[in-house]
Image (cartoon, rainbow, N blue to C red; front, side, top):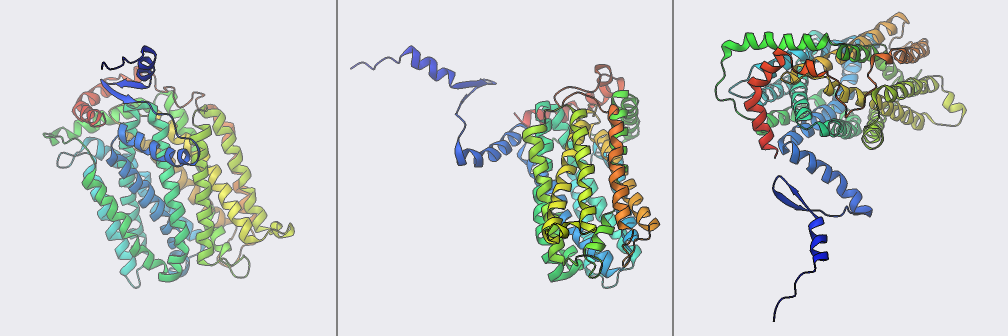
Length: 506
């Protein structure tokens, strides 16, 4: 009996349900609906990014941003606040200044970026720096944890060394992210969203358990636990997929550094680059940080609501929920909006959200029957959500400003500018608290510090003309800048590495 011939209509329909990509045929499946579709969407999103980049890159994002900076940063933030307050017994303005000092390694990110871009170690540009970062983190946390009466100077040095390890890991992964954003421009927003998502989820978990850990084992014991995230950063350096450079002439390092600096400064002279950089710095520097003043008031048994360690961790965990909502809102709703308009509304909301601190401090919430415990978590969540919404477009804008060949160095420079802005904000807030005589026991002028901070947050709105109107999918760098002599040289020397990376993601 002869087989029945397949109908041309059926055959055509079957062909329409298949896609041919690079000679390979993939069957097109309809998206799942309902709860299954909702649960499978994040998984498919992770798979899509891992397929186009590499699973080890996604693993590095999860470890560095999610576990080290997110989880470890959340736990370490609460532990360090209590360490300076209860172990070293310093004033809030002093604690603010010390926090600024420990952030100095983040201000020299271009140095780490130059090292990762032009000086490979044993034939690798990224992996050894993850290993170095992990070693720094482990030893610095062990010193703070195990020493009984560590002098404040050595405590500062240890925290700064741990911060240096985190900064090196961050800039190395930033280079990988910027490189992947250039190779896969359609994934630029997705990669930054992945980084922000991991950071927010990690911080949520970290802050959720931070108060309990501080209460159970004390701030010094917590720093011993933080050796684990640093060890995982070391593991990233062991497994990261990176092409090996078989022969590298270290005698050419000086020339490569000169070429990288020429290309970097050529890019910075471009108006399309320096104007957004100036805005990023000023928008952060003008938003004064008075966190330590609020923290000391939170935990004061007389002037404040006397929140316990568990309460503080719970408050900050709600801040992470707000930060996570900010990432999701950006990814789902705002990622295709043009930069200038989005930054206007997010900066305005960020300034208005600061008034919630003033309502809490003046206890106006109690007049409306809203308890402190409930109002403070709303305050923290809204503040972190608006802050994240303001930050996400700046991150995407930064990736669009990176010239080829020195993407790691230049992205590090942009992040360094941001960190100098945060440093300025932290020290400015510390000096403001000192000037207004806000101490461990006196919070009479804290309301004025909050009001001044909120007014300063509005000032970046008049500087939005510095930001391009383009959207994230549009190029910002001019064509002639991408083809400068230095960039072409750097690209030619990176061809082996970039071709290998492209092949490994196909």
